[in-house]
Image (cartoon, rainbow, N blue to C red):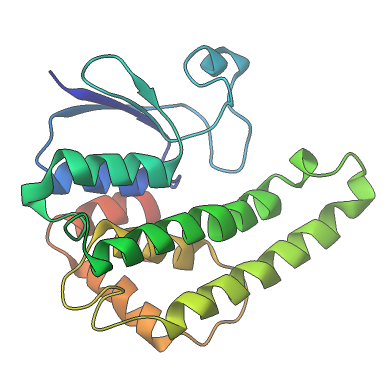
Length: 205
């Protein structure tokens, strides 16, 4: 039994693909024929009614959406692969905190910048929405930067939270002083397993 991951190049499914690969989990990757930042076809709503990527089909046919939820689920399914700290530990509490923080604040900012029409019916407000989203994303990244606990976000070992946060650095469009996060992103880009997936999605960024 294997997973099925729906995504498109450069989209958030990058980190889910990375997590599945780190877990040595069998999966089929279905890349939709559309560009990031453009709406998906209406037919995809039969798979994901919210019409967003990534979407993961579990081996039993269950549909999972929401990137952070998918990553937490995979980390629990493959505890021996150390995608996250052990459940019940302070480190796991921090993992859940920052995964949720990123999903609510960073991902939301990316969506507001890329799809402003979802958040206002007034086209005259698109530029203001984009500007505020870029500013807010920078503020959220600065909060995470201040809480990096070691070489990686949670200490000595890389988790999928690091891969997740590194993805947002690629998507950020404003100025940011975040040397710790930059080092994490460099480690993710150079990782023997994640690196090739990164380059396929983001090139040399």
